[in-house]
Amino acid sequence: MAALAQAKDSVTISMTLEPPTLDPTSGAAQAIREVTLQNIFEGLVKMDRTGKIQPCLAQSWEIAPDNVTHTFKLRTGVTFHDGTPFTAEQVKFSFERAVAADSTNAQKQLFTPIAEIAAPDPATVVIKLKQPTANFIYGLSWGDAVIVAPQSAANNKTNPVGTGPFKFVRWNRGDRLEFARNDAYWGEKPALAKATFRFLSDPQAQVAALQAGDVDANTNLSAPEAVAQLKSDPKLKVTIGKTEGETVLGTNNAKAPFDKLKVRQAIAHALDRKTIALGVYGFDVTLIGSHFSPLHPAYVDLTGTYPYDPAKAKALLAEAGFPNGFSCTLKLPPPSYARRAGEIVAAMLGQVGITVSIEPLEFPQWLERVFRNKDYDLSIIAHTEPLDIDIYARDQYYFQYRNPEFKTLIAKISGTLDETARNELYKQAQQMLARDAVNGFLFILPKITVAKANLDGMWTDWPLPVTPLAELRWR
Image (cartoon, rainbow, N blue to C red; front, side):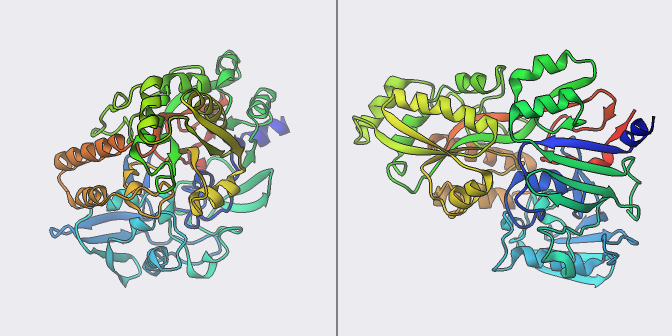
């Protein structure tokens, strides 16, 4: 009975990737946000499980008629885990730090519209933008916009200090991360006193741990072939939900021969998306033809832009000056969807004359070599941030797609406050990316959640890749 009682106020959750750091403002890895956002760290606002924006450290906000002045009323009586009082000054510090020249914030563009931040009193923040920005509040729900304190910010990578419902306890690298309930939390007290994230990169190890009861849940199972088997276990419940994860064959548009449109078009015609997705998952998932979520009202189905046509692919390669094809490297991060899709993609490209060498990388290597240094030809990764089509307007982003017309369009979208008009512009942006075959657009990453039958609160869908521990409770 003692063991059972202990289980009722603690949880062990497995996930595929270990975060490289624990500071969501320091890098692009999804795993950082998955463990820390809404657990350790909080923003002025937060995204709920339906994708709606809710108050968080800001209890309310007003947007002036000029659409540039945003006034946030902050919660009072909130403290950081080290006892530091939360005030408007930390908000000012966090956002100015995020946009600073030496910032490593992966979503610095969220803050570039800011012209001025004022803290007229401890519970008020006034942010003036350079121009009206349609998705400014929405972006503040991302992990990149969490509020940190000046005295602890430098150490958040290894000793994170936030305002959230859970506090950092210890991190055994390569194994697990342990949190404890923050009993001084400003909001509703979490049901759980302890939480552990275990890092299990091997898909079969994830399944075995669930079946043995060694873990209580898995955030997104890497072994889709085990779904039927796990569903038949009465001790477990399995859901297949949606994410915002556009999974792409990332292409280095600035590197020959991928700087030639006809080469990228040939690659697009060589990819049978449906076969790739079935090979990865064994069941149908949503296919995409551009970088946009089908959950958004502006979505356009562009999967027919470059239909599967190996003969057309060969002809385009010949027109581009490669009648005998060419050789390239496909650098793959650890997730099973990337490794499995990579094998199939390599075979398909081989059928049209493109000889692909696969190079598996650990995730820190992938971040360093592919994402930061752009030292790659092709890669496969899911981009899980919501509404992130604007990454294609960044010249230095790792795709290295540089299209002034697209940049102008994204700037226009940002300044268009009318939703109907903005959605029409989003449609144009999707069509431009599809037409330019910037990447091989593959499918939307599903979320396969497995949990013990009496554990409630795991998110079925991922409008944002987070696992809020405060929403979990045992029955």
